[in-house]
Image (tube, rainbow over all chains, first blue to last red; front, side, top):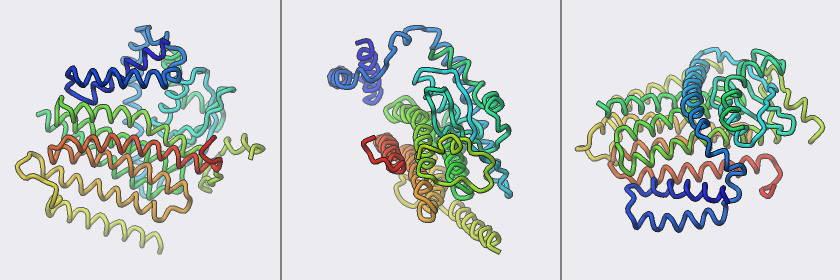
Length: 165
Length: 111
Length: 123
């Protein structure tokens, strides 16, 4: 039930942003559409809806996680641009294995997205039972599982553990 | 003034778009192409959309540009992940200069 | 020998692009009293050039996965094109086309990669 209420609020917000400026007619239609969406697909949305109420998670997300993510993203683009424009193509690719301690689905999704948008790495597959990610790395610096984990994952793992677990 | 900042964002955006497509043409195998193209084109298009928001301002088109930006940041890594997984399951070879392939070592018996 | 030929082709494409950008902006779809039309028209030239590089990969790609990557990237780039058209023509429905294109491109990429796995669609 909580998950349906959360989905209803998000759908209403999205509707009113898409039909900007909202007046009462748009909002009335939006309430009906959001009710329909929440009724049909509500129980798929959030399994643990109670963690959405803790405000410290939002603080960690917007103040600690987002600047790090944007900085790494920009560095990744400069890195790729340098590799592409270099005449000799300085690449050294391979698929390595890294370990993670995160458990929930949302945290793993955000971890995989962060890995994909940061310098040189692209997540290929997730083995959820053992907590193992397979990562394609354009410039392999360390073939071992511990070394790769230290370089690739640890920047984000502490922050995501505070936000999502 | 804010229009000029928006136009600077747009120029950064299309520059990175061109770099991403150049990587799509130049790099040797699927996974490397996926890396270069996904990173550069996602940031480039998001930068173009943010520039559009700055130029247009707070009206219908600007809000929709912001929504589209958030949507692209959330979905394009997922699409890249799905393509990489599908390509590896379809047994597309890595480039012959690749160093290590732990995924193939682990998944040897499943196919 | 082959490498030299490739560099020559690249140089020809680059020279054509620079000449096109310097000569005049996109000759249609523009209202000359709106601001920044010259800059945005030249920006459209550059994005169309990038789309042509993607089309080269779709045409030439040795495996199916290469083609799917190029289709995905082409879809993302057309969203940017729609955003620039929004400013340069002052019609706000172009960005609606952009949002719908982004959604549909994401779903079609997922379906194509599912097909690539060789398990069919109902897995």
